[in-house]
Length: 438
Ligand code: AMP
Ligand code: MG
Image 1 (cartoon, rainbow, N blue to C red):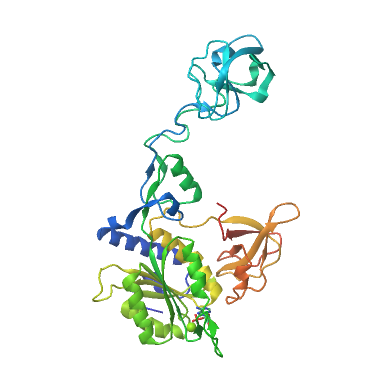
Image 2: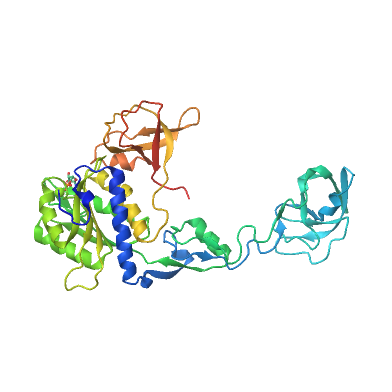
């Protein structure tokens, strides 16, 4: 085990997934404090709405207007003064005095005993506070409408000014990972640009003598480097700046210079491969020279070996800023699982997001699953429905850490907790969906 002066937790030989997450979150919080001390005002920029998807809102977005801006009708129907409901008659008859359309308000006053034909979204005319929906009327002529008094209460079917949002109040809180609805909401307030965190610069590299770049000829014993492309895809979903440092050989000098190069440019470096037993000793030595990095054995499957810490500011190269480092395992599925479980939330936290973990849902397991207590497992699965329409989940075949097809065909992880034993078909299990729907 590596020695790590700042973090006693790194000395534990097999770390619970939750402990690892906590240790990572603590280190990121420490980095944030340090960067605040270095003045981070340059970490905020203004981008137009069409560029803001998946960026993180840096400041509360205050509504410049009331929404709705004025009282308006929630239904197609007839607007009137609810005082006319204050009667012993069970049926009400009102004179139609005009029409209000959305975008074409009716300027006049509505007299007692009269009403105005009104469309959804049209401004409520002066003197009216209630709308009877068209379908609730008992009869309609050119001049009059009738309806039963007990069909509605005063104030119904009217949207009040400021009911959704009040001027000066936050419409979207700082720290939101911006989704399509947030862009629409900002536009609905007339806001064309948003203050967001600058994009994190994330360097990636693959390490291993056996790796061959796509496009090159595969020689005997070598394999294509797939991890960089999985990582590029994962990072692009977060709208980050990716710095691709390519493939690095299992050679101390090459690895060292790649690390120095990445650390001088990037906020975060993610490598894959070279942290498992045997290789770790070699990587360890270099990483220890450059930073404060712990080598962990995490009680999880897939993804047991992982390195994590910071790379020190490189002598001779600019600022005293540290680069966050993740040394992920080499196995292609383990890369994606450890990214999902540890890296994604750390990147979001580092960039000021308030919500960093995706939600879990539950589904009924369609088959038995063998599981040993004492480690967290991430099985790849497809979520669907059983014959009764209940959520049902089945595994995508062979679950080896190198079998990327198990990920590719899946739409979710079945997450089996640390203490969980075997699962019997019909049991409810935790699910993490790969994609959000909106
Ligand atoms: P390592 O962690 O370096 O021992 O690698 C574990 C397994 O993952 C080995 O079978 C490697 O060949 C494989 N592997 C490592 N890096 C990559 C990569 N970039 N793309 C695909 N497979 C990899
Ligand atoms: Mg290797």
